[in-house]
Length: 268
Ligand code: F6R
Image (cartoon, rainbow, N blue to C red; front, side, top):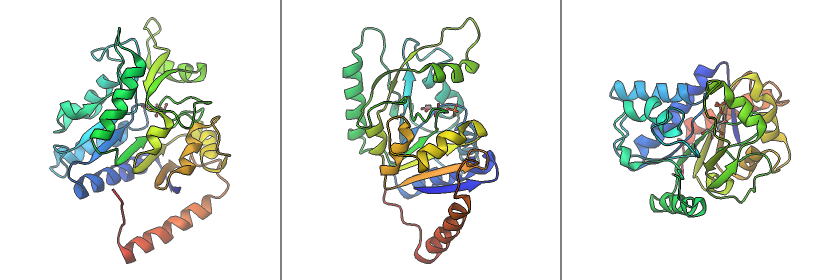
């Protein structure tokens, strides 16, 4: 795991945007895995700005989102499709027919929908770079604690903690879904690179468990310890419970030197 600690959330977003930019510029037809939530909003702002400055085109990219609520349709302002349109898709030149969200509408079979989503990812050639946030309880996607580390796209029941954490985004009288379709942990681990962004003190404990805790379904993000190319971008607050901060800073300096000498190697 490559852990990179920045002074503030803005720097986290800028660095994440560089990873996306490098991928798109290196690989025509790049496949992005995207996340919703508060954390990646500043990343999407960076990407939109790069596009508007004619520095970045999404014309040849395909995207797969991690998750989507059940029981609300894509026109609902709370849907993750709506979130993606508002924060990214409507402002860049991506072909929306190549943007996918794991939906399961009324009458559809969630098992079949999950399998079909997995198949679509495969047909697209797999995900090159998966953007992730982390829940305060260690979830990635909506893989809540105790999710199988071998899980695939399926329906999940959200925990009370996640419902509480996300209730800030719903009006008091608004329907808040308790179920979601989500890529599984194994789906996420299949991505060639995973880039997890975490900012703020409320993520510090989950970040610590992810990086230095035991590999355990209790902290789904700890599954990233098994990934060959996992990059974790943290601000100081999210890194505050890590004991080896100096090591990560130092190792990162060495990585920069190695990259300068040998060039950046990305196995996309
Ligand atoms: C969103 C997602 C979630 C969020 C996590 C953190 O698509 O999959 O795992 O990344 O809940 O959310 P924020 O960024 O709002 O703290």
